Image 1 (cartoon, rainbow, N blue to C red):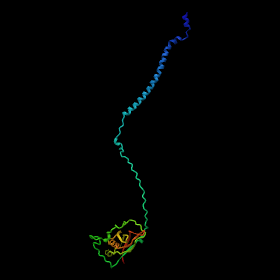
Image 2: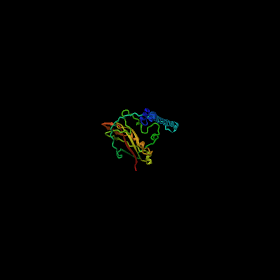
Image 3: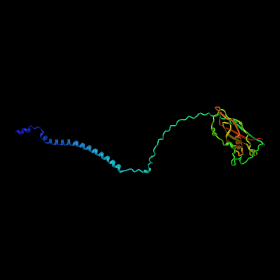
Length: 250
């Protein structure tokens, strides 16, 4: 009777619950333990897959090497760039020199030579420059310039007073040119020293004909006499240019 009362007082389903709760507890414990392991396994699997992908890419890159033809490459630049040292140039002020005023051809001294019947010239080998030791333009072409400094033909020399012609011998008209009826003009340039003497003479422009005009003009140039040019009341050596015109009388 007491056993029946005890059975009758147990709630409904208690026996089934008591019989299955251990099973459910075991399953819940297993699931709660397996879930973190599963999550960790998934994380490890994903990392492993990424690592395998990188290794596959590296292997693929190593499996297909790229070969380059060295003959097609440009030569290496082996020249060293050397920086040039900077050179500082000092500015040098040029001396101020006066510029001479140009002179018209009409104002240049001109010597005109007229041939006459009284003039006779013997043309020898020495006069034509074919001789051995004689000088065509005279013995006084060799001068001593140690006493003063003489300018060059194209050198500018400043002066206050230009040289004045004092003595001008008339050149001899060449007999050969006179007989042939040839005329011509020769430009001469003489160096007048501080004493007014001709120290040097050159031909600036020839006549263009081989008739002896240059020789005659040069021979007369050595006998010219000048009053020297003056600069600050001191005589200076200068070059003087003039022309000699050889013409025939009608």
